[in-house]
Structure formats: C-alpha cells, structure tokens
Length: 122
Image (cartoon, rainbow, N blue to C red):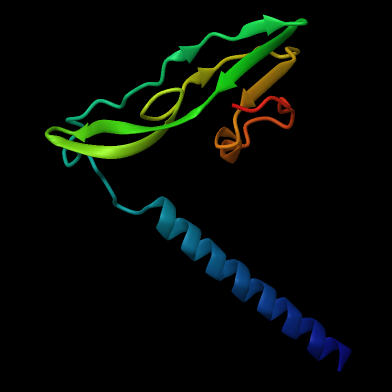
C-alpha cells in the first residue's frame, strides 16, 4: 500500500510539473507582436518636480488635492483630479537617509503618501 501511494504521489507530481512546463513554454514562445500597430500620438504628460521646503532638517512636501480639466485627447477636455494641479501630481524626490514629511489637507490624505502627517489642516 505504501509503495502504491508513493508511486501515485510521484505520478501526480510529474504530471503537474509537465503541465507547468508546457504552459511556461507556450507563454515564452507566444507570437505576439505590437510592432507597427501602436500609435502614441499623445505624449505622456510628465509631472513637474516639486521642490520641498526644509524645516528642522526635514524635507517637507505640501500637497493639496484639486479638481480641474485637462485635454487628454485632442479636442476632448476631461474632468480630472490632481495633486497641486488639475492633472496627475508632482514628482517628489528625496535621497536615501532623508527625513521626509508629506503634508496635506483632509482630501490629500486619500493618497496616503507618508506615514507621518502634519496635524495642520487646510
């Protein structure tokens, strides 16, 4: 009985590994190409860099959530939400070892950008 269970478990393991191997091979060898079929007519808007203010040796970024309008496609304005502007948000840059504080009003807290928040309110 033990021998039968051992062979059965081995057979199941080999079958499972074979199935995984066939699936992986078909994924790797898939003939999918998007060359010549994509049109990037609209450039991606790159958010500007937000310069922090330095307070007590910490980099402090002040954020506010705003509604606005942006033209995501030519001739088609869209209602948008953004941080410190009508669309997207600023790029925050800090270096390893920097102490960073991200502050915002109640609406900006939706973004949960930092574990440390100011007690100040907008």
